[in-house]
Length: 383
Image 1 (cartoon, rainbow, N blue to C red):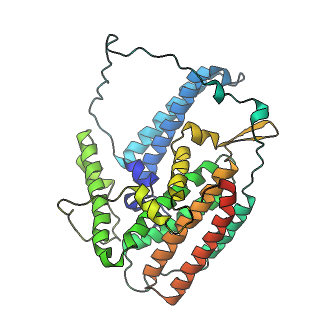
Image 2 (cartoon, helix red, strand yellow):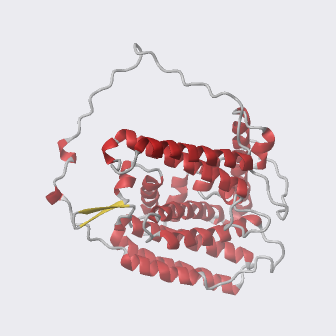
Image 3 (tube, rainbow, N blue to C red):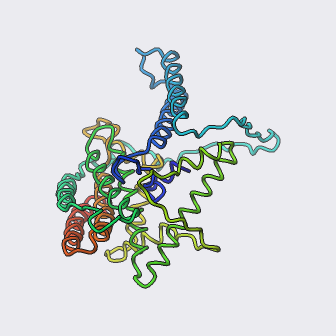
């Protein structure tokens, strides 16, 4: 649940960037960092063991398998032991084994038949000649525009925490995309960050889309995450995690002033992200394209078969792993610029007290992101 907050780039996820001496939206709390490292280590080892079991022939012959795997498991256990001391999310409660269905009740497995149409000969494949070079050039130009205005959040008094997190998170997410989209082995990170920017931008646009009910939607928005925080704490406690540790993972640094506010009785949950994306895409020729874009990016973030297909390239018959397809790279750059344009410009306007400079800055960001989209739509084919 905690990983999901960060993975979706929502308000609870952004709160993990609040530290006593760091920059909001750019830093990472030690307890969250430890938890992420622990899960990453476990994920890598589990994937390695699964790959070995599924395709033993892929193991390099010059490496002794058993000692290597044993050492990998030991190192992951050391990471977990060190991480638990920091985040405290551990339990002494015994994990009950899942009950298995009896053989008499289990349904017999049906043989899996591969459709002949799914098998393509090499000559049937279209040449992998698409390129996102012009999209990347436009995105780099947009990134330079995004860095042209400096905001002093405390110039007009203590800043609103959510605006500060949105501004910092927008810049941080954009920087992540620009820093990784063309780097071998780390290109997938750009897809994760782009999806986060798009998702939170859709929520922000929904929140401010109707000036007559801004306060009502603010209450609805923050109640959603108060409720999720409470649910996460209760889930951890019910699993045997000490309540103090479960609450500590959501604690705030001393420089954050909280205004205690309860959750409204009979609160209305936030609309589904699909509705918000449809609203965000309304001005475009194909209003539904952002829903498709979000779904495509999700294929990579959830490591589906379709997502894996977009993380390999075939150049001159040579297979290249950890490389985004041109279509996915263009899509990630496109929505990253679009999403960050709204996140950065709207929060900058609030932090700058709606100054004339902030309004001009917003227009420049939106125009520059539109140039990225005009180049990207020729590559990814959406809108």
